[in-house]
Length: 254
Image 1 (spheres, rainbow, N blue to C red):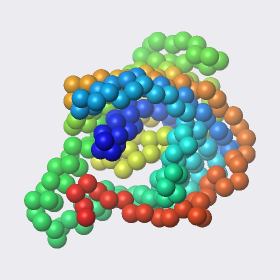
Image 2: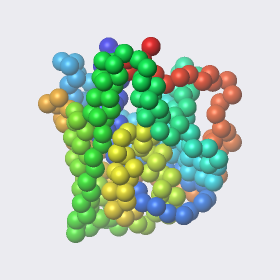
Image 3: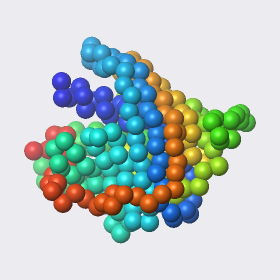
Image 4: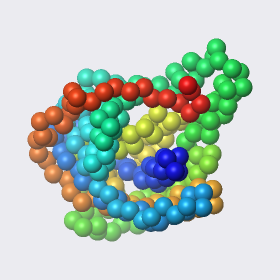
């Protein structure tokens, strides 16, 4: 059952596309996103519909994404390392740039068959993104928005996303993009994907996605609830001292 939960979480991460473009704002900001996911099937089991709220803090000291109460992603301004935080277990994992490549290089002295399998897995994780700007515009809440279409493909999934983005919001968009995508920034080809996402002018105010995985459709939607300029609470951009560091293990590694 744990494997199914991890599979479901991975699918939802693929479906949840948050889009932004580069900017230069430096004040602290809080961005609140509401996420709705419809029920879907995974290996004969039904994953129920769910609702959640993501809260992102952006500031001169870094960025932090809180995904409900269970997990956070932390990026610090003075380090290139990303931290994946597990609150229920009071643990965190360091994700250094190029971590996936380093894991693969570490397999050189191992069993050739296992190394080949991992290389094949990395090929399956290659991400390809195409963004298409449309002429459609509309008002979403208080924001003037333009419609964009995003196609994201991986070996085992394909996601189609409709995004309504606005240039009315002033935040550090480059930082927001990277913290929003979290672990996906480690996937092969993601730097190229980021350049494609740069075609979107502004911040995603409303989006809806359909991800096709193994013949199943996973549908999610995201809505911008709030963007406010305010000082981040003390400790926002600090690793909890009582949390223990754990190692990230690649599938198949002992």
